[in-house]
Length: 112
Length: 114
Image 1: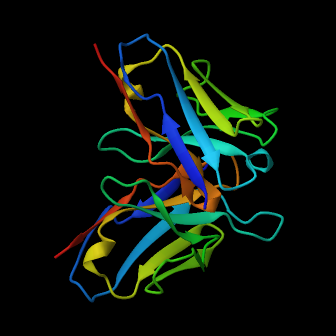
Image 2 (image 1 turned 180 degrees about the vertical axis):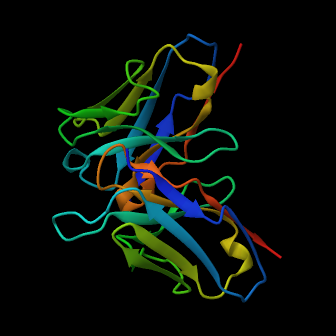
């Protein structure tokens, strides 16, 4: 199984400041079709996970442009340029290049 | 608009069985593979099972292999998860999902306890 490792596991950020989360996979997520199957999700309390970024760097419909994704191969980063109160929750990276799909442990974002 | 609506979650005793259902709408259900993903209380997301668009191929996490069975009825746009020999560690919110497309249901709570 592909192991997804996120760091840090928790973040406390002042509103308006940036935040960054790292995700490393135990195998390359680059498929022979040229796509890299790495996703970023946010789970807010009481809600299902919401997709933020798909295939490393593509912002999902309706997602604020303060969110951006980057990386390649096995190393990926989610960045929030200016954290807002509504961004609190737990962030997960996920790979879907092969089954079983696997998630990172989650990074809890809090507001200072 | 894509909608996934789960049902069937309940309190069940260890060793018991439960069948979850997911009603899909807003997309051509028979064209897409589907998954079940769960989240135990206070823990992270765990993929549980997947099924191909035709239903011919099924996949399971090691933690549920031999106990859970995924199935689908494309004529009814329904996804199912039959769960047998339930254990306390199966307690979780279960989501019906197309994870790669960002589509998730609201989830249904399964509690395994005596």
